[in-house]
Structures are given as C-alpha cells and as structure tokens.
Length: 235
Ligand code: MN
Image (cartoon, rainbow, N blue to C red; front, side, top):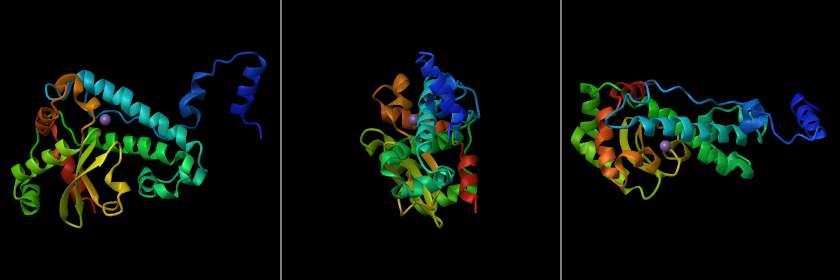
C-alpha cells in the first residue's frame, strides 16, 4: 500500500531531490511522545542549577531521547508501540531485539527526565511532618537520608541515576546505570518512584565540572518535596 509518506519519498526520488522534508525526519510523522514543557523557566533553579545547563539538558538531551524513542517505536508492532511507556520499560524482554536497546536507553531517558523536571522546584520547599517521619522510620532522619542518598549517587560509576523508591511502605535508595530506572528491575517495577537524581555529567559539568558532590549537595536546595509526597501518597 502506498501511503502519503511513501508517495512523497518516491516522487522526491523521481525528481532527483534527496533532501528529506523536515517532517519526515526523526519520526515526526508518527510522533507519539513529545518533549514536556518545563514547569518553570530555564533560569528558575539558579544559582543551584544554571540556565545554560537546563536549556541544553531539556532542549537538546531530553529532546533527543524523545526523538529516538519515537524512531524506535516506528519499527515495532502498533499494539506494542501504544503500550504505556511504563509497561514498555517493565517488559523490555518482550520487545524485538533490534529495538530493545534503543527503547531501553531512550524510553528510560524520556521517563527519567520527565520525572526529574517535576521533582525540582524554583521555590524552596521542605518535607512535611509525615514525610519527615517516613524518612526517620526508614533512614533514621532527614540528614541520614540525605547522607545515604548522596553516597549512592556518588558511588554510581560513570553515568546514571540515584533513586528513592517506596515498596509497600518501605523506603529504599538504589542507583541505576545509564538511563535505566527502577521500572526495569523486577524487584522495583511496581514500586513508587519518589525521587530520582541525574548524575550524568551533562547534568552538572558546565557549572560544577568534576565536582559531582558539590552538585548533589546544591541540588537538595531545589527538591520539590510536595511533588515527591504526591507520588508517595498516590494509591
Ligand atoms: Mn540527563
């Protein structure tokens, strides 16, 4: 069956034109996922996270994950492509091998960054009494939690993420490499993912260079605790 896309491709070739129309590129014609708008301006997290980092991180890195995820999904069965992103990430082993790594990296990248923008806030917030109590029960207090989370994020060799997850009321801190996330891990696939921290160098290098610890310390100033608690309380 010749669809509009094939027709245009063929007529372009017949006419000797090899320039692909912009809307045919990067899966735009079948675009499924889109880059979510930031809930604040690029400079809103200054001075803790600089505007240029935010602009490149959101506009270039996250956009590339979205584009490449859409491109990979064009190659899979329609029903599979229209599963929720969460279900795709929970069932990577059910994906055809030729797109599995692309969906793992770019689907993970899209999910992780969409989460990351939401759990940061331009205005300072703090944990409520009930969440503070949760942190105390699970980690011995807010500062102990911060210490353990920081250690986990520091200990992630190379690119990756640190996470606070809740499994049936039990809080746990874990780390994942690359753009992997807890949904991909059988033990946490159905946990609530409360808080994720991007420790890829692209998240901090312009301002903090090699000082990941400084970035992590300052990042705690912009955590959006009401959003973390909204996820925590979700049924
Ligand atoms: Mn990132």
